[in-house]
Length: 336
Image (cartoon, rainbow, N blue to C red):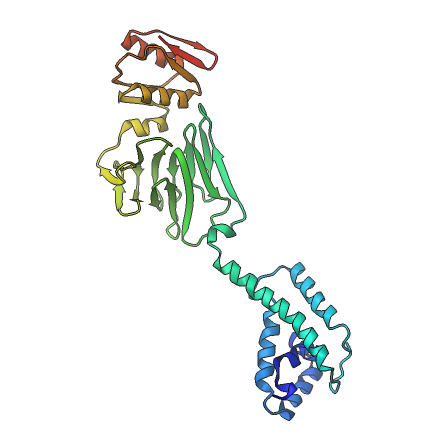
């Protein structure tokens, strides 16, 4: 193959690069005459043109600083060539090969960087993830950037992107318990990942309970509709319904009512329904941020009640029903 029919010939020619990047009338005339005089060179010229245009970074979205740095490196590699416009000038082949190798490194680097970027999952391209959490005895209301509101119960955590950049979803991860009042966006579903299930909504209000160590993960829908899914099954809920995923049996079940035990906390109500001691202890410790020591462990607990108010008021009612006593010292409650 003749030298002027190779791509590297044109990539290493400063006047060719100048013609592609900053064309002038003089350069246009020169290179059009060149094409007419050198039969068979047009394919190599077109390929070299495409490579140089790709290095203008329009496709790869590099910053201006990156563009400038890379162009300076290329120019440094070709600095030994005559910078003046000398159409009749020819260069030593070894020089062409050296400079072509430098340019090839830059071209390959760009293509590899773009390939890696395209193959990364969308989550990894997000600049920031925000974590909001509560401790025992604490509740928190969070407003998301799309206008949705999240109320976190005690000992709970949500993780979500600082910006919902996805074109088709707004995704949040939940550990613990939260109430979601979702702003409607017909183009982007609002998705909550909670352990073994996910909840998909557009504009609606629902609560999710996903505390570690619980037997089940439950979704209670108060407004609108949602789709609750595990790995094998999906079920649609309407307002006033709930769904619970039994972790031990990997089973998702829908119910046509709401359990006040699961939704009372939204209205600052502590609700017990035929509760055993472990349930009472866990809920009170989580709600008020205390440690409870039960010295009446032989007592049989099957307790129901609804409370709004102080820990002292709740303990007084519970212990009266069970003929027990209690004392509160700092953050420790003793029942005897």
